[in-house]
Length: 264
Image (cartoon, rainbow, N blue to C red; front, side, top):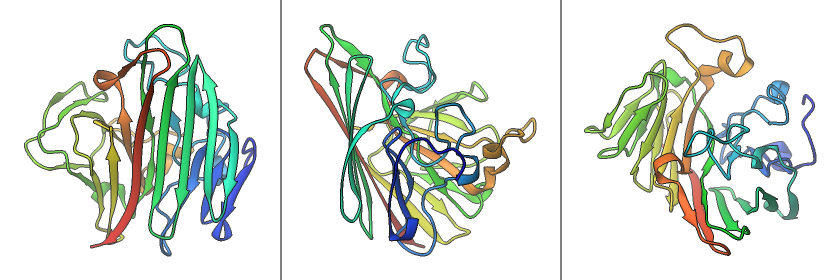
């Protein structure tokens, strides 16, 4: 593994992994196939950020709801968390960035990956926060994958500038997919026909989703992540952009995402 910062907690011979840096899930699987995409040989593709896995994008997403925050996707994924660990793999990480307390709880079992994100405003004034799990989901072929559970939601593709509302219940993967969805239901599902499975993301308090893949109509980039575009689809869940949440001083926001797998 290339220059992975901090301590790595593992179980099941490395099939389950959580890094203390960013309190970031790197691996989980319920059977013989991985559910999370992570390229250990190129984990340091971006400075201070572990590429792949499930990065935490908070207390802002992108450059924030007003597009005026740096670094991109917040501070959490660049931060070393204080972590407690129980067996087989139950990790609780805490950190504070920009006066926002962050608590990330990860529970891995043989059937589910459960994640709970709690954001607390420790500032003396109200704050607007965003929080997203930037989940890289492993697939047999991204070109044949689709995301179900989006009917009626609003969408804005930031790669093309197009926007609208979903009449159908599925988003088909295609080049230039960088689609922010607002008003998504509590159970988006990634359908992977090549590996014959469905990956379910069951959420609470997560009206936003982002569907992303680095494939571009103008060509495939040179980065290791871009070169691996067939191997993953990002289905990101949480609150961002138009669904950013105002927090009064001392108040919390609690988000959950649970990932399970069924066979088709």
